[in-house]
Image (cartoon, rainbow, N blue to C red; front, side, top):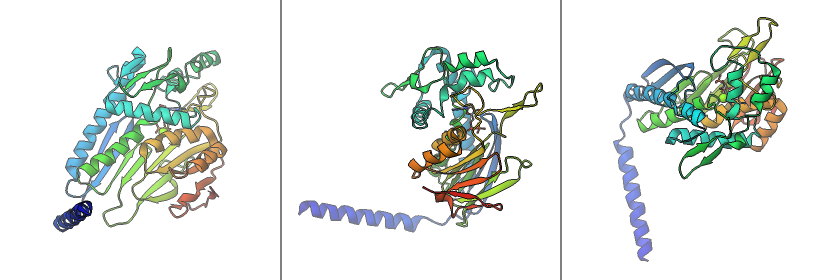
Amino acid sequence: MKNLQHLLCLLLAALLLTGCSAGAAEPDPEAEESSTQYLDAMDTYMTLTAYGSSRDEALDAAVEEIRRLEALWSVGSEDSEVSQLNREGSAALSEDTAALVERALEICDSTGGAFDITVFPLMDLWGFTTQDYQVPDPADIQSALTLVGADRVSYDAATSTVTLGEGQSIDLGGIAKGYTSQRLMELFEEMGVTSAMVSLGGNIQCLGTKPDGSLWRVGIQDPVGSEGSIVAVIEVEDQAVITSGSYERYFTDEATGKTYHHIIDPATGYPADSGLVSVTIVTADGTLGDALSTALFIMGLEEGTAYWQTHSDEFQAVFIDTEGTLYVTEGLTDAVTADAGYTLLEG
Ligand code: ADP
Ligand code: MG
């Protein structure tokens, strides 16, 4: 009986509290006002837009957060935590780096090694880390391949310590921007922003809806068309829309005229040649979306679809193959419009 009274009191208190706070929340007179910041960071061009009266403070904090995370993870800077780990083979990591590496290792595992942060020696060999591009000697690829395998990386949660296998080094470039956009959504929420959209290179993530309640419209770039031309539009609320494409970063070998892009198949050591030109992941989890856009690009349409079928509660996807055909997973039926139509992938 006493317990029941106690419970009723708590319930009443809860009702009063929510009632009060709802009454006190004035509508934001600047709800429709927006600010945008542009910056170069993490090797890409970023655009951050936020709405409402706390938008400017929130955007300043977001830029600071991006710079902080970039300093932790840049392989171009000797002082970064990742460079230190790569040099020393083992390091106790700060909270964000540890969380990111732990997540990355889970996804390496769940994608059967298609996503693998230990590809760094291969990225380096192809010149993607220095922009001093070259088509490597096949023997050098074979020897770099012996260093690839995230199953040799261990993570001790109790001490946040990551230990690499002998000679290994890691590259978080396939997942870092997704973690960052996810982090920005949390930061915006903490600072009272309810409507925002960020674009970190090909990584888009949106908070809430637009201030008028309508959905965000995110374009999927035409992989073969001129820059800025779009083959489909996805309408979303509170989602990340993250694309990996072979047209994003590549070089042309002058001797042969052949192009080589930056998504490396850890099974072969060569740029993935799976028959796809782009993969877009739509998910509430930006970190997952970034890693999976890379992983499913490597897997190709068939294996990628099978992966989606067993994880369809976590994400949806749009694939574009070398013929220019679009494939859209079932969960996006209402969200996607494509002028040329698409093939539906069923669960
Ligand atoms: P972008 O960096 O253009 O957004 P992605 O998200 O697809 O594109 O990531 C590509 C980056 O991921 C590469 O530049 C490299 O740093 C890293 N990477 C390349 N291949 C792999 C792979 N198989 N697994 C994990 N990371 C990879
Ligand atoms: Mg990615």
